[in-house]
Image (spheres, rainbow, N blue to C red):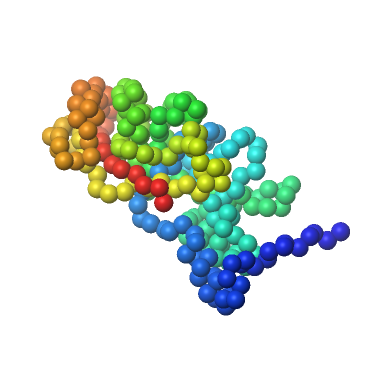
Length: 264
């Protein structure tokens, strides 16, 4: 028995426009590519996997958030796709370096994007519904950028010390002031969670820095984005962080910055 045809094989809006113009509309409907660091929140079943090149550390899943184990997942671009715009979506996916996995039982594709250690940022927020991350950090994964929420640090400053100890190749530790991703506690509808994309935006405000394991605490800027409470707690944590850095077997260079994140 032949498969039923799609009731809407073409763009349902603006049917009187020529095809070329409708495809341009599809291109502008997809998320904009930027050079800013994308925040990837820690999600359930996050799996560390070394890539073909040793400098890469992949995290999966990435482009989509899990809703429940063994449920159907929808990758971000597929939410925009119909028959007419298929070529536009594939072009967008190719620019995002996706991994393509086939669901044999349905004959459909699950499209994911690998986490690239050189450019992307792992994000940890204070989300009590999220799974524990510490066991997965014991192998000391190699990536360069980590971000935590301000609430995460204020609730337990020793958590940042633990991350600095485990992630010894990290060059940038950011504290996100204000809102950030919250895939488990967010009250957004399921589909909106899956397309939610957060990026670090605006200038960084460095609070602590180490150069060849030599630490320095910078003065508080009352006109900056760092609150007095956050700056004071970081200064109080500085001696503990310095001891953690001194335990490393090679000189370490990194910064602890305050940043803001925006949802794209």
